[in-house]
Each structure stands twice: as structure tokens, then as C-alpha cells.
Image (cartoon, rainbow, N blue to C red; front, side):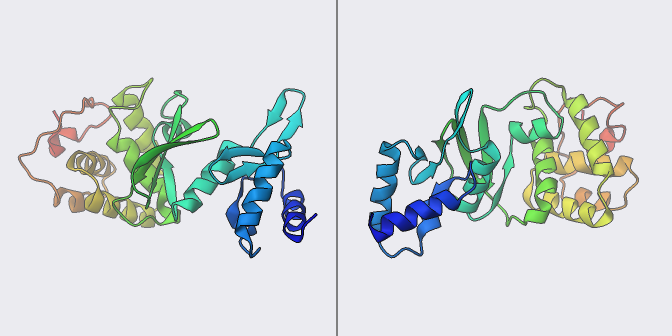
Length: 239
């Protein structure tokens, strides 16, 4: 066995089962063309399975058949590839308890240009970020995205969704609230700012006025919130 082949094979055997293997795992080996050829040979020998272009894994054999990497492992790889980012859309809204719908596609906000692709059985939609993404603030961005998509969240109503979102906002600390409002004010559409403003107003948070200052007084919003779930909605031009 050649030196490159033995290096590649030994490294593969050192990986945990379920890891997504890419060319980056062998970037210290000078002859990358030889690495690629040997990986292809391992696929033909059924030692490796191909997940996508330049992506492989060692299959784990179970009584139910061959098992590949977890969705979480694939998502982690994708986010690294786009230089950082976060998951949004139905899969996150499901995880937040806003819907029982199981997503058929993963939406990732990152620095990559918008496109759709598929890795293994996972359908992926990339959305280009309009703002710098700070990983510690991802949860805040996901909540703002849920407000942005409030009328599109399946298997629920806008009133049920906003009640659950309010409960999550209520648990944020003051530093998170400040960031939350700042993101909304700078990067989200007026109806998102107004919705968050109405929530902050209900919570008697003085920072609601920061959102009001970003809105045009004559703009009217038709989302469908009831007076019960958003008592201060009239103050924010919801009808």
C-alpha cells in the first residue's frame, strides 16, 4: 500500500462512526489528487459511502441496515462550510415547540449565496444573511425569524404561536432583550418590529419605545392577532 493510501486509511479508522469525512480531513497530506483517488477506491470497495460531492462516511452496519451520519453531524458540517450560520425555518419552529410539522428541508442562513442542494437524503436551502451572525445570538435570531414567519408556521395559528413566543421572550435576560430589540430594529421588517414592540409594551418594558421610533405612525398591520394574546396590539397599529 502506498504511503498516501496507508495515511488515508489509518486516519479513516481513527474517526468516530458517523463522522462526515471531507478533503479537509487530509489537507496535511501533500498529494490531494492521490487522496481523492484512494477515497473513490474505498467507495467502490464499499468501505466508504459517498454522501455528496467531496463528502464521505464509514457506514455503520445494524440489523436494520447501513446507517450514515446523523442530521446534526451533516448540519454542523454545512454551517462550517458556509463560514458560520444558523438553522431557521420549520425544523427550528418544530424544535421550539411552535409546530408539530416535521420539515422536509433544512434552511440555513449564512454567508453563502442563496441556493438549494442535497446532501445524502437531506434537502438544504441556503439563505444569504443580511447581518453579521454571532453564534451566541442564534436563539434570538431564530425567535425573530419565527415572528417573521408567524403566518406561515404550519399546524398552528398565529395566536397559538405568539403565545409560545411570548413565553420564551419572557425568559430572556436584559442583555438578551437589548440584543433582541437591536436585531429587530436594524434588520427585520416593520411588522416584526411592531409585534415585538407590542410584546415589550405588554411586559411594561421601557425599551419598547426604541422599536416605536423605527416605525411609521400611519402604517397598519394585518396579522390576525387577537386582543387576548396581544392586548396592546392597537397601540402598534394592528387591526
